[in-house]
Image 1 (tube, one colour):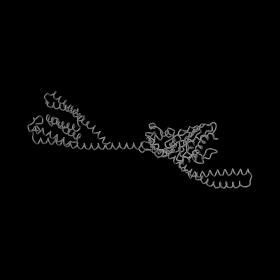
Image 2 (spheres, one colour):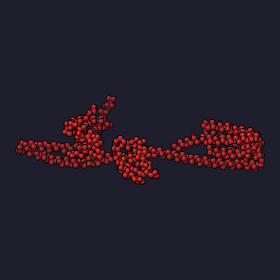
Image 3 (spheres, rainbow, N blue to C red):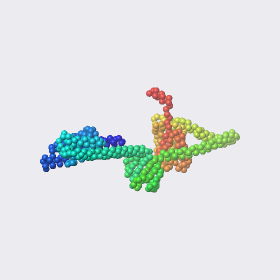
Image 4 (tube, helix red, strand yellow):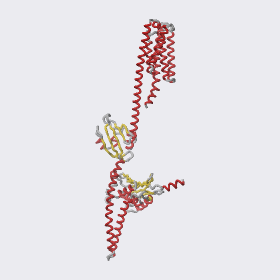
Length: 550
């Protein structure tokens, strides 16, 4: 950045300085021409012809300098122009004198220009003094005609030395001052370029951080309207970034809690539910602070999307409850199995005695039901021990059987319709057949019960990378968002005859197999349940043989 600024300065500032020098020289020469013309018109013969030739030559040099301004190297042009000026000034001093016209003042001016443009003031001061001393000594030696400097050149040596010393004192201090100013300006320019580079780098860094941070950032003005929003804030709010400009905070969040807790000159943290522009519900955490040094009312809002965090927290809490319920159920099952065995054995002993036939029939029924209940308890305890074993089933076959059973279940009424089109390719998913049937049965019963006036219960299957998704959708009364958060909690139900275990068991079964059960619902718009299950990967030998055939 700094190098680029220096290159810019060197390419733009240098030609402008030479152009200014050409303009300054042109003004002086033009004034001299007018003065010379006026004097010649008033008193003919006052000025000699060489002066007009010198002025014309200077005009010609200026034209050449202007043409070469963008062609020749800068330092070469500057050196030639300053040396040319010193020669021309020497000519004017030779033709007009040292004291009478004051052209000798142009020596320090030329030396100062050389110091500023090239930083070589002492060199040009030396050249100026050599040229000035040369014409005086050449005139004193008789090599050059006297012209206007003859009186000084041929006068006393003390006077000549005084003029030479005066020229030294007028040029070298100016050269020293020019050198000092040039170095000071150069240091100031370098410091300014360095500061500009640091500011640009800092701005780029800040912009990079603000645009890539995962937290949303909103900055408001003194009227509490958004003056800046980063990309993360726009994504969390579900709006285009441009549409956030000049929107009030109250309009964006529409939260009474935010308005009541947003006190000036204080930090505020709160958590609220926000419906995005696309209808998706998000849980957002806000940290609001007054902007230090800003106009009254300017605030900074830092937004974090806590939806996934809160979902994981709720899932962990639910898992704890399910674990407790499962442990309690296992203990109860273990305790029930022993009395069931005793009941079955006692009924068999009683049936072997001399009793009536109708009593024997009743005892056989009791023994049969006790054996069935004991088998159910034993199967439950066995499933708890072996639930981590990986098993697969045919999703299409199980779902087709479930749809047929649901079609003849007592929960289905004539007003209900069932929709299902199985995919053409079989899909094997990681879950036991009876577990998947239990999950589908619970979901279907809930869907039918949610449509007392009738409606369509639809089943569909969708393939995803590494998994398959079963969607069960109804057209029932739906549920509020707060009710959705409590669906998987055991023993919590809104039905008069419900147990609150159906969805909890279905959720536990699916999660135990590495899948997930997701529910979305809105009041009066029905409910959608998505069951995601892992699919069976092809066997390595099958993949190898397929590759060999290919």
